[in-house]
Image (cartoon, rainbow, N blue to C red; front, side, top):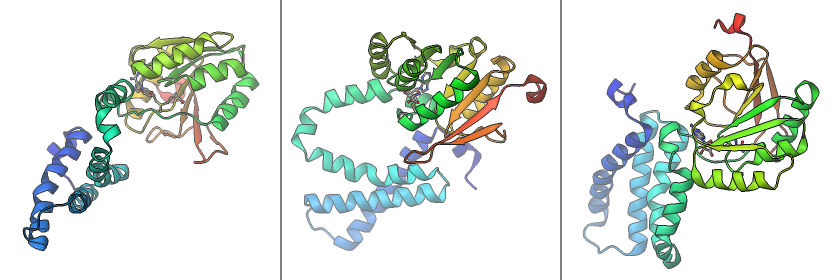
Length: 266
Ligand SMILES: C[S@@+](CC[C@H](N)C(=O)[O-])C[C@H]1O[C@@H](n2cnc3c(N)ncnc32)[C@H](O)[C@@H]1O
């Protein structure tokens, strides 16, 4: 079991620490095997693969989530390959800027940008059109506005609101909202500052990391009878009232809770 101080570190610092630990090990192994042959690109690539493999093994042994094993393994080989492409090097500052504008806030809530599938939209439409067609709905972290704008168009009686913290996705969602009828509201900011009691339906497609804290917010703020829908990510230890499996490429699941304060104990 990893030590308590280790578990308190943000996962990005854990990953960095393991890469720093892996570097001298990889270097030592390389020199033991290859002696002092000067490094060509291919050999550098092998060193990067060796370093990645050691960092991935360390991540596995310290029980980091499985996707970190892959990040740790692929980081240096991919970086090395990218450096060999002159076009990437020339455009590096612009690429970095775009990445920062899209993913710059990931270190806070550990929620990157990926979009709900079209079939998920259809499932949401089918769910809401039965008894919630006039609902006020918020999409927490609306990304480029796919759910907020498309669902608004599919079910015009809804009152859709999207909030997004990353600037570039927000700008795209806002532009999209301008050509959507009726027009949904798109706000720039963190959903932690939104009052969820103002909505009949709260939709979230985030990551496992913020779910326990988000559930506390849901229980503290949402009204009796309102719906909390989480795409893919469960609330640890809280059984949903309904689960809809979507017929898309990764069989997304919509976990749905109907808020009842007598039951939720708030
Ligand atoms: C997985 S994407 C989902 C996008 C969209 N809701 C959808 O379903 O297609 C999650 C989005 O939440 C945003 N996000 C993460 N934490 C946030 C926060 N505290 N406030 C607002 N947006 C946040 C991220 O920038 C990202 O764009």
